[in-house]
Image (cartoon, rainbow, N blue to C red; front, side, top):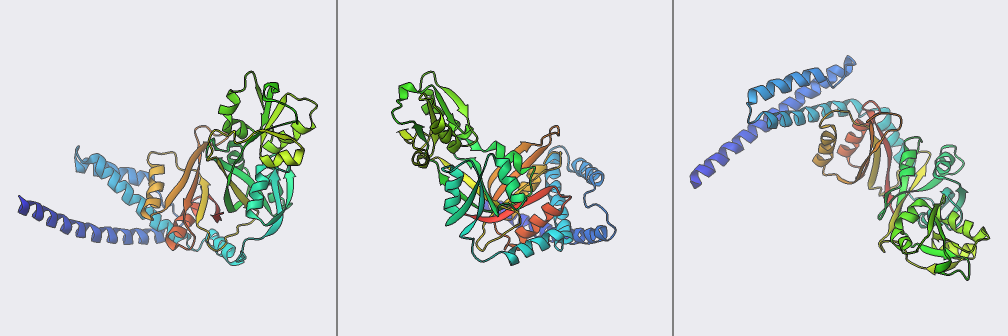
Length: 381
């Protein structure tokens, strides 16, 4: 029995060697075909030919192996097309823009800058800006869209935006706006969120009839709020704006959920500290700029884009990341506004443009009909 097992393994080793040699030869021929297609301006993807080949393969493999054979050859087709695309895009305009960004970015992230934040003094975005910059000259804007516009119009060098929270998840407003604006992520940070219930001096918990905060603040403190009988929840454009509203109101039956820094700024009293649902409550903020900046040590990349509406499209893309050993830290899909059943995919992954293979994949994705957008290669503070 042992001899039979050893013999089967030896035969498999010989077959694997043959497969590898044939694979290398097939990929070389695919590269040649890609060069011909590029010269004649022909598309790389020929769906009718692929379909015909897969039907023939499934029929030849027989019922038991048809499905496995189809998956094997579909993967082989994807690898071949990827190799063809990379050879065509290595000298693309996008590849050149990456080189320019790396060459023109200073060695150190700036200590001071004009920075746009949503809200008013005491906002968590301001605290994030203080974590990223030694001394930021902050312009406060009414909403997240204003932050994007301030950066696009070069009114501010950078903008600070929350993108996700460890308790309540993705910041939907920001992610939706990302589809409408041109920007680059140049840094990010994780800020521990410490929510407090802020009131006018002398107000007690039993007096409160309304709690005001940003919708994320209300979500992150839902358990505490549910313990206040008969309370109404109202949303503000930011947690700090809620605190400012309470301070300026003549009412003594309202409270704000905001940072402890807001208590000192607006003359409010901290009625209750640490009211978030979880103590380990972090918000991830991104720092955006008008032009790409890639600082030394950047080890995180973000992209977003669409995928073909066909079975296996997402699997094929993920397979490329898996082959390169890339760790995806975030994958999210969002419906595209105005388009039925079309989705935008957002990816964060741990990687650097210093890796030539990863760089090749990125160039392929961005250059392939403009389906993907490069958002930045940056580090997280």
